Image (tube, rainbow, N blue to C red; front, side):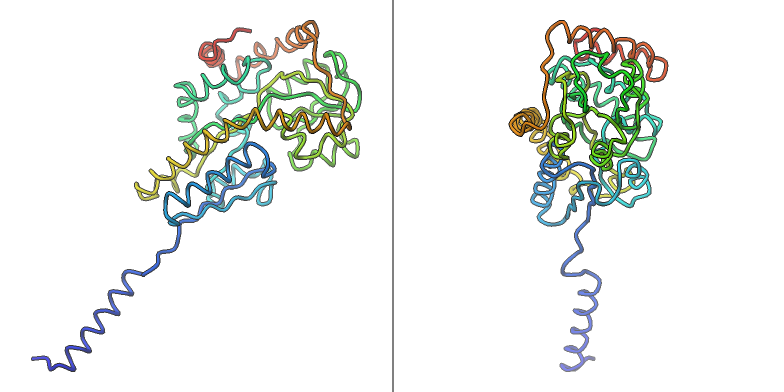
Length: 335
């Protein structure tokens, strides 16, 4: 039979054992979110919004570390880093999934596939968007959302008004067979280059020009090293927010539910400001006066569309003619 002193000693041992088995403060789940653009772009602001909401809704149970401007990985490296688990979350441009083997995403690079944000959102926010994201599962990736940036302008250090103005120019593109075909159709020389290297390449003349939405052009200060630009709005640049599937599936269900909620709200926020951010960037660049922007006439826009029309046909075998038609049907556009 235990005396009072022995009972107290045993009780103390039990308390210590319990406290060792159940830590008072569990370590937060860390999500490293890497991306390649500036914090003050639509993607950068949406990433920060997700961080804010994820940490709020999980009451600090999740910590989101956002690494912008290629601080961790360049755009050529980040997908492999995600698959290896070195980072948990990315928002790469849609062109990046072609080299991964999911070529259907390359349809987003087809020139003049969308008439604007409304027709685009019929795809990215509809059943077609869900169908495309589901194709990433076999690559060990879970697709969570589509995030907008915007529609691209062409820029160079020589005047751009009509398609022939790009003849012979070395134009930087991101890695995409569709964008290679686009530049070839215009008689330009496509140069694949990491996003983080573009400013210096433009500054030193390694490339003559590039294509980007205004927000990327402005936040990377490309307007300081590009004398001319044409408001072609010829192609869309957007992103898919993705996570390492094993990491995502391994999260507690209640935590994943709160993160889904945070992602939905961050997506709504980011997509709601995308056009505004691009409009503000365009206005700021025009005010700076370092780049002369040309607004296309109806005749000039028709010439750009005609010059770029063969790209969809040329890429149909690679992407899938049925996929292109399905996206067109969802978007309510025709080419």
